[in-house]
Length: 515
Ligand code: HEM
Image 1: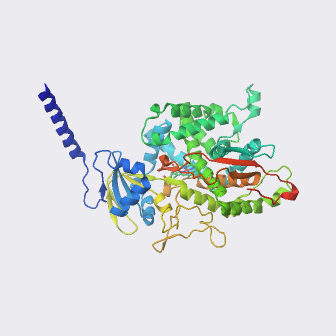
Image 2: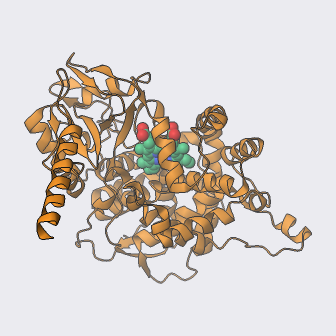
Image 3: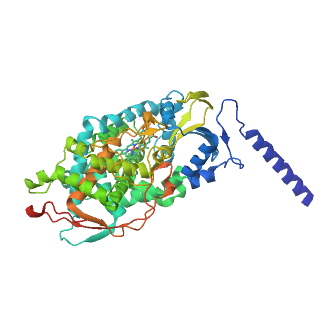
């Protein structure tokens, strides 16, 4: 019996080895160096996942600017030379972003398959809405709506007394930014409509929606790694709870819905998607609008409070812009035009520096055919159909040649000697076109990038204006949660305590700022 079992085991093992050999990829002429580790399928997954930046830096040293790695059964060709990033993003013909992005989003959010022939035509229309409603003239309207909503939320939360309060900085940021961002995109409850229909106001509980969002978002790294959402029960429940709030029946009861959401609703209605499917695409949009903005707002405020120089420069700038209007504005409402926001170059530099330090997104394209990629240096790399091409901008963001002392926060790194935005950064003596890429690049570049920066600017300006703020333990180090590396802005791995109180603003003490 044991001989029989031994023989069967030996045959199975031999077949397995033969299968592995048959499926082990060999580097073909013209292809980049192949880094496969020694385990089939798994390849270098462990090294990559445990420290993507360290792994890519080491591999770049060994193999040069282009190499292919086996990660979780897929072949990723990394292009690490920042001068060649535009060669990759310009390759729209051979490198597809949409198919990959839609498959991924369908799996995580459970919406319809927009790659299917019936829906892909409409998807192009849905995609074109992003730019039309998040940029250009619409951007101003959206920004003013965010300003108004931020003030509503802040006013409601503003302590009446002048005593110091304590709350986690991340909790403070999430609470305020989530609600204001949500109201800006999805509108406010239409109390008149609700009363006419015998319904009560406050149908959405914002603390619950925020909590559901955070629970879902927390599971995102697992979902991105391929774990089915059915196995992440809490995340699944949270996603479905959010979807219930975003059913078209619910949205019809709201007013001041953004153009972006209104136009998406109209298209989804025309496409005859089922109601839950429509709501899940809205959850996807909610996630895109908040998942990176919340941690980016956290780091922007955190670094401002941590650095005395940043704090002083930021407050001086906010006072310069707002002080004049507060004197003739009794109700304390803040007005900020686009020009005023654009003139806040210190806040802009703080935000860009915070994004540089905390962003770890990976840009992925799929090769739709075999083709030869020509890099900026005229080096070529043969790419196989179905392989992924990946850019990892964190390599650029933390390159000491481009950004001296790259892990240090320097509030004025993106300011020139006249305090205007600085855009000339160099590597090997050559000026870089792409020196900061938290929003990706090319056709898939984040369409919400201008709005995101305005949102965070407004958040900084209003909190610095209305509150005295301090970190309770400024010397306690805060580290980034690297579980999100590859997925966007990394949040802090734990919260830090913030002390805040309402600023005393009487005509005599307008200039008195306490930190
Ligand atoms: C600091 C905040 C934000 C960051 C760092 C960020 C970053 C990104 C990145 C890296 C991508 C993928 C780009 C690529 O692969 O090339 C992306 C896509 C996208 N983002 Fe943002 N984003 C932010 C805020 C927002 C906001 C506020 C909105 C909308 C209100 C938004 C809407 C989108 C959409 C719709 C896409 C998909 C674009 C497409 O399919 O072509 N993002 N974002």
